[in-house]
Image 1: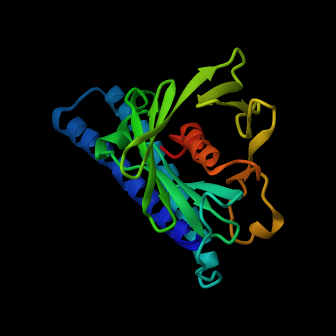
Image 2: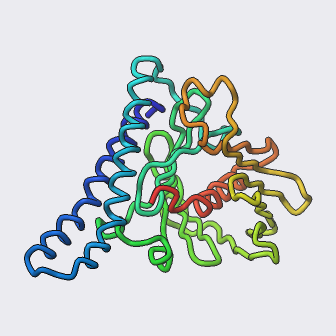
Amino acid sequence: MNIEKYYRQSATAFLNASLISCIPVILFMALFISIKLNRLFLLLIIPFCLYSIIAFASYLIQRRRCESLTNTLEEAKGNSILQSRTVLLSFLPAPSLRMLIFDSDGTVLGEIRDDKFTLFSWYLPPFLDMLTPKTYGFYNGENMLQYQFTMRKQSVEIRNRKKQLISKMEERKADKSTKTFYMYGKKELALKRSLAFTDYSLEDERGMVLVNVKKGWMPKDWQKRFLDPNHPVVSIHHSASNKDIIHIYAILAKIFAYKDH
């Protein structure tokens, strides 16, 4: 998949989300008409109506972006996701998470997604959906499962493609709301957030910045392919090992869960 196909798929997902949110509106209206409920009952449909309108507007935006890139990109084979040090994150509508990882050429290197959700999940507010552990699949560019991340309240379990536990990462909140610690093995990473919660950095126990995540900033030559300037851009330090990078993506999944709920 490349960024053009992403915009097309994203447009379809937003259109489906818009239509799905119309279902309770139709049901509530039919119920209101059939048994003549109090008019205040109609207030229940307002959130669904608003979301349907927003999703449909997003569909039109993504479709326009897709059309502007049609036949302008060549299909290219992406690099290994663990070898790429500067990537861009984008999100498809999903009950919890569908995070796509792109290289600078607009080619998908991989995806982290929740594979187990139902239609009912779309209607659950995030604070309720978060009450149960979530398992996300970490896929490469060929859509082959590489790892699984199981998110719990204060820990993340990492399994390989055979679903064998290979690491457990503990989460500890700092006194400051903008700082969180993640520990695995002998490693300790400090996650620091900007006050606006748009930019993030991960530092190791020596104070070295292993990862920077910036939103609203993008290399100039990327902008002709990525038409939304608010995509997060992730820069990973060259000293980070493959093991570090796997844990970094697990942390990113936890940060950006429910980004397009």
